[in-house]
Amino acid sequence: MALTSKAVFYYSMTGNTKALIESCDTTGYAVFDLYEMALQEVDFRPYQTILLGTSTIGDGFPHDIFKKLTAQLAGMNRKRIGLFGSGNSIYPRYCGALDILEDFLRTRNEILFKFKFEGYPKRQVMEQFQQLLRDIS
Image 1 (cartoon, rainbow, N blue to C red):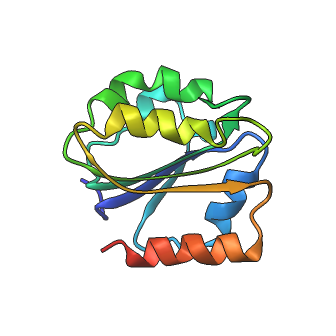
Image 2 (cartoon, rainbow, N blue to C red):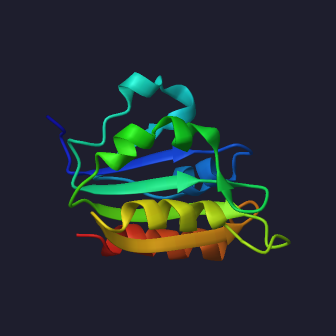
């Protein structure tokens, strides 16, 4: 059984998404770096509120880890989900990975927010995200 009903699961290719999480106070959240986990270790079931973080690959695609987690993601039902991640605004689908995850998850879950940022998170981005974490009850 989880000690908290809130968790952050993230995958960071270049370190930008990881830097955002590491810059914030995540007290009250279980935090999981998907890069460091085996797929069979990923379990969303114990958590009611789940924040998913990923960078976007090229023109709007999530990292392959999320394709490999399709079964676990499809099993999410009646969860409260926040999406966050970095992308590059030169692409037409800026942070499109978050849009894909939202489309996949929103029919069975509540999407709390979708937070997009570019490059290494600046102070203002960190502060905005920290406020989102605080606002989730």
